[in-house]
Image (cartoon, rainbow, N blue to C red; front, side, top):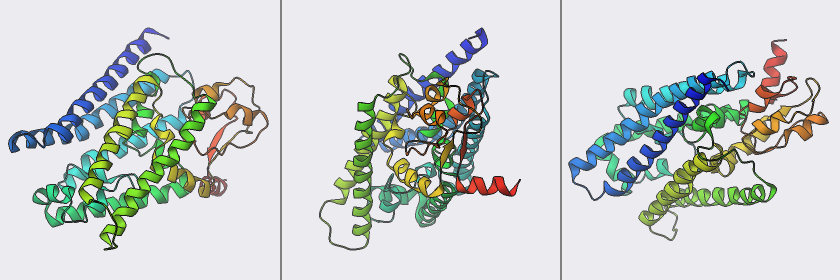
Length: 357
C-alpha cells in the first residue's frame, strides 16, 4: 500500500473513531442525563445531538466516501461501490439536511426506517406517549403530521424500491443507520485487529438471532397497533416504550458500533429486523448474484470481499446464481472479480437491460 493510501486510511479510521465516541457520549447524555438536567441544559443537549446527527454525520459521510474511493483507487473496479456511496451521500443530504430545513424538524431521520424496525411513528399517534408529549410542544399538530407523512413516503420508497432493485436499494444505498458506515468506512473495519470471517457456528447463531430480533420487533409493532386500535392488550405503554428504547440502545446502537470496532461493518446487518423483512421482499424481486458472465478462476476474491460471509466462489465455479438471504447487494464481490464473471441483478434490472438492448 502506498504512502498516500496509508495516510488516507488513518484519516478514515480517525473519523470513524470520532463518530463512534461522540455518538456514545452524546447519545448517553440525550437518553440518560437530559431527563434529569435543567430545561436549558436538556435543550442544549438535544440541539447538539440533532446538529451532530444531521450536519456532522453528513459531513463524515461525504469525506469518508471520498477517502474510500481514493483508497480503492485503480486497484479494482468500483462501479457498484461508487453507486452505493453516491446514493448514501444523496440520502444523507435529503434526510439530514434538506428535509429538516424544509419541514422545520431536526429529527426526521427517526422516521426513515419502515416498520417493524421502530414503533416511533406508532407512538407518535398516541397523545399520552412520551414521544408525543415531548414533541407536541415543539412541533405542534402540523409538525407531527408532517413527520408521519414523511415516514409514510420514506416507507413507500424503501419497500417499493426493494421490490424493484432488491436489498441493495435500502441496505447499501439508502440506510443511514448501519448501511452508510458499512460502505463509507469499509476499508478500515475492524478498527481493532484483523478482518474476521464468520464461521459456520456463528452464522447459525446469527441465523437464529435474526428471527428472534424480528419477532421482538414485530411484538412491539403489533402491540402498538392493537393498543391504538382500542383492542384490550395487557401491559403498560410507558414500560413497553422504555423496553424498546433499551433494545435500541443496547442490542442495536451499541452492538452496531461494537461490530465496527471488533468485527466488520455489516455485523448488525446479520440480524437487523428490517433487513430480514427486506431479504424476503428481495426474493420476490428476484435478487441474485449472476456468476457465469465469464469463467471463474477460483481466486477467492469474491469471498474475501463479501461482508456477509457468503460463499460466492463455490457457486461461481459451477455457474450457479447466488440467492443467499444475507446478501445486502453491496456489489463488493462484483467489483473485485478480476474476470468480471459476477453481476448483481433483479427481475426489474433484467427487464431494463433487455429494453436497452
